Image 1 (cartoon, rainbow, N blue to C red):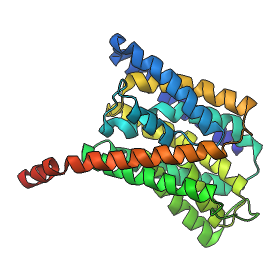
Image 2: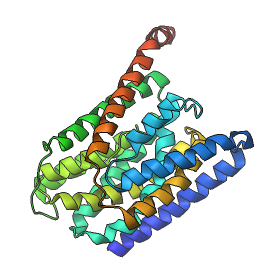
Image 3: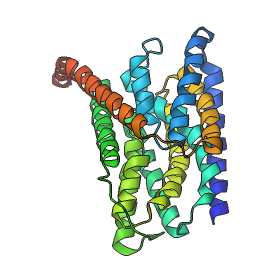
Image 4: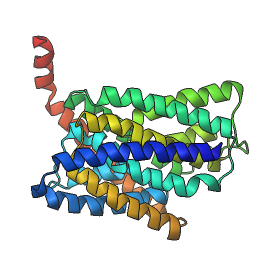
Length: 297
């Protein structure tokens, strides 16, 4: 069954790569080579950090907001994050999925729930006006910061010894991962909230890793196909992040997965909080325009 899951990830990733590469080649702008190169650096850093447990969505959002030369519109941030990091997440999953024991039925249910949630979420997020995207991402980043702070302070649930879920707990896990899959398309990473949920349900925290990585390896490419077809992402920086991210992920998993990240996590918390507040202020600045638009409609 695990072989079938890995085969499914490979097949979906190949389909996404075909769509992604074709769209990029048909629409690339050679004048934006500088943005592509900056994306390479961003992807290497953020997915290196992702593979050692810091996360990539929040850190990438912060860098893109600070780096004015890249200039990714807030409305295109969710699509850019998902498209750019889809293949690095697949690389992490393929290298790590077989290393931890977990109940296969639980794994499949949780992955399918996240995939369905992401498919629905991507269709909604790609069509939202910029103000709503800004507000959604501001709240998502605030939630991410809250989870990171709880983890840093030792307030995250310790979990239990179970490697699978049954009955009511399985239903809660399925519904929870459905929601997390949808939120992932809005720009909030799935890793931290999924780990918290799994621990709360009494599973061994290590069992969260195949669930998180397996879900993201399916969710990322499937949701990103929608973003690519809707042209709801920035091509040059996304492709740069993808290539740099795959390299960073592989190097991190091979050589430095046990790197201490305590103080780095506090830095990420500070940056994420600042970015959340900045996006919230940007949304408020558009309030008048949105209200006028709603009255006209």
